[in-house]
Image (cartoon, helix red, strand yellow):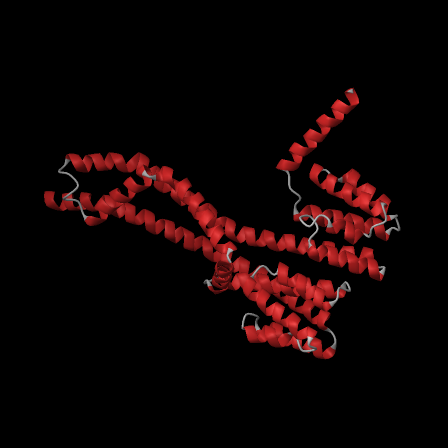
Length: 367
């Protein structure tokens, strides 16, 4: 009974750990690289999966890999075993593994897949870095304003009130005091407004019409719209080229890309391209007709279709757009810094001016 008790305690411990831990994209990239190395060294699949289970540090990942190993040991293909865990191994991953198993080049496909996943991790990191600075500066600006309105302005306001009340103060000064009252007096409502706002926004985005309007807006918004489009086109080109090179049929590849592109406006154009393929027509035509894909992309795809080198052309497009994404992100980051400083400086200047105007008026009256 002691062994059973210990086992039960371990299971509870693993369950608690599973609740608080998640499997990151970087974890998937790491185990994919390790599996590719083991398979490339001609180690049997079951033994390779044993090694992955032993090396897995996160309990949740260990459980998933153990279930994959059990199903493979029972005779199921690796792709089918992974398909049972869609939150860990998505359609793109499963389809590429299946293509690798059918072609007998699973280790090469896994290496290609690991490189692709690592590239997506890098891309997400670049986007997060571009957004981190303005978010940080916003919090700093709010903290500075709160400090002014809580610690400094009440004392100055008391001085003005003792000299004749607020009615005689300039409009800007009264506006500063009103803003301070709202900010300090109702600040506790901010978390409620944020939670309700996020809930309402997510509900709207989940609707078909809301999702389309939001995705279209994301592509049109100044500065960030261009960045969103570059990232989406890069993801489309890289994903499709990786799938085709790995031997995934083009119809299945387009169906996967439609799901991972991350924008329903672009996904609709990709769905039209998939429909054209079933009728023996070109991919490039519906992509061009949508007006959402840059002319260079549709032109390169058309050339790839004519020459029979679609995978190569898509890789060239993906490489080019990866470089453009990085350059644009660097430009956006360098631009946002001065913009945020100017915005914060402008707000603080208005507050300071509102406090100085009564003093200037008083000084002129004394003279």
